[in-house]
Length: 202
Ligand SMILES: [Fe+2]
Ligand SMILES: [Fe+2]
Figure 1 (tube, protein in one colour):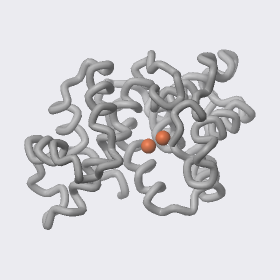
Figure 2 (cartoon, rainbow, N blue to C red; figure 1 turned 90 degrees about the vertical axis):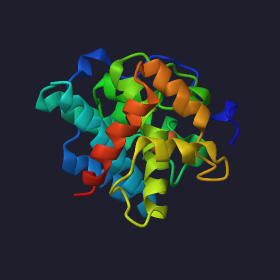
Figure 3 (tube, protein in one colour; figure 1 turned 135 degrees about the horizontal axis):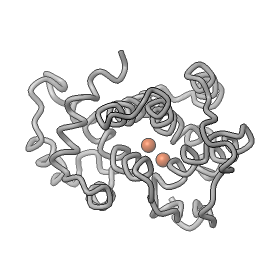
Figure 4 (cartoon, rainbow, N blue to C red; figure 1 turned 180 degrees about the vertical axis):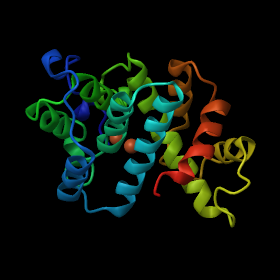
């Protein structure tokens, strides 16, 4: 992937007047149904959405905020299946045209700072970036373990991370960078994913 080609070239997203405007869960899933044929990608987005919502909940955020965090996770890769060369740009423009809350759009725009050229600033931004790659990595690890998530430990995950051939497309560097920016240790992030991700598809 050419990193420069995905650069969004801007740092302002959405319109502050639309703060609090969201898609309902039904509307968000309808958008995914339209845009995404790849079932694995749907699983990935549902997992990240669940992690985001769970994190917001544990932080004591209200239902509305939990839903906003959920949406950022659920839609962050919505355009990846059909328009990989317009990844991020397409979903951002769609949400802007639907007058969606700018914080949600910003979080999506900053989920890959190396690619999109947008720095994660808010807590929502940072956590989406932190959960994205780690969620996929731990999911891949669960699929190769005979007992799945059962009995999984952070040290096993970290051991796998050292094996460059395993889930090679997952950037270890992004995981480290995201953990630093979020101010949460990799161990704590891994443990959070291990304890919440199994419930994501229920
Ligand atoms: Fe992405
Ligand atoms: Fe993703």
